[in-house]
Image (cartoon, rainbow, N blue to C red; front, side, top):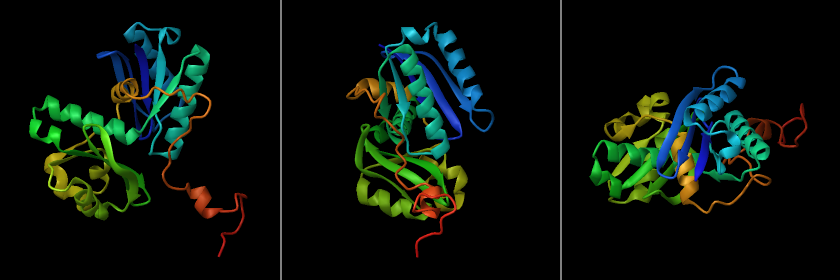
Length: 237
């Protein structure tokens, strides 16, 4: 099956088209510029893969957690393509996709002992916090969480036990003082479109075209500042 994978949970979007186990084309897109450029990159990936949107079998999107704006852009873009091409939309966790990227890195680097251990996906959540998830063989252990980076070590220990642990994500570059101790087993990257597509293919393949939305984990700043949902409203005491 030919699947377009898209993740925009961070400042670097991941885009790819896979056909089963084969990667037909993939790219990274800097989201710090114009949003419209994401569509240009998507079009380029389709051209390099030799696949028109209508020839895709499904669209897969990283639903989060991550940047609220980035997730909304990614979900809206994925839904637009799926609606126009009349294809199903599958959603996966962005942290799960990141952990899958970590496992791919371990295999490529022949760090095989860690493949049977725990991969911890950690992304910058801003507000001096990180999003984190623990995975063993791509299966989530516990729940994905958001907390201060200094809490990561104790949280991982409570989930991993005595298993080997490796880390993946962009948070170490944002919080080097808190996370630098893990640098030796840390792979710096963000979720790829390849992993999003591969996990979606391996998953339940539930069509969320109509009902799907981003997974934020925590309330937005607007919800915190304006709990009554009225712009300009005072915060509740």
